[in-house]
Image (cartoon, rainbow, N blue to C red):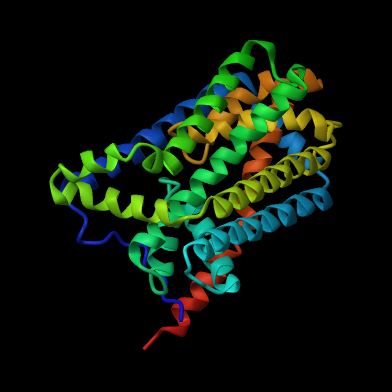
Length: 328
């Protein structure tokens, strides 16, 4: 039976950790506000509003459906990772947890509130270390799928990427793939790292050792399957951007989107509220090759953000129903 936690912070969190979390959250909010402030000095709000008023909502509903399908696909990826270490959790339960997690990510500035919810909930059925480890690997495999897609597109058609960003994006993608591979398999290749951790104070080393144990238990086949799901998800994500562009009456090909969306998604790594502001600052440069004006590019980026958040609101009734069911 699912018992979702409240949105209050646990009292067990140490004061330094709480202070650090607050500072990180404040940094994200500050970067978001500064970025949006810069964007709105370049693009009049009236131009963005006019683009939204002329939108074809049928295409935006298609984009919302694609985003929902992406949530289900990522739930399958999580199930693959759990099954890989012998923990069986029903897929419908994982889908519900992903929906609730996406809702929490949408309303909490940290962007990781949903991951905490997923860890707490799935720990009802699997060990805490397994819950934490699979959620981390789930996130990491998603990033690696994005980096792999970027490398593939640059190898096939480098001209799709803005020339002055090609090397930077390529370096980020390659370093991301190398770093992710080392995190997932480096503990097997370099056993001295685990020995080094064992020399640290138990309170410091214990969480890392538990994570290593989960990573070591994951078979390579499961990791490759998760990476394959991540690639499929990114193709869906590109389709979502394409659908939103159609909804705004822009004629941008799916192929062009393949060169732009990975860069826009990498912007999510910046300290901000789900990339808001950072992506809008990048959008005019990236979509200039598709013939969009600055205002049109910013409108497209903002609309993708709002479509994503709107589709993730389905997690709210799931959360509220769970609270109603466990009432005294």
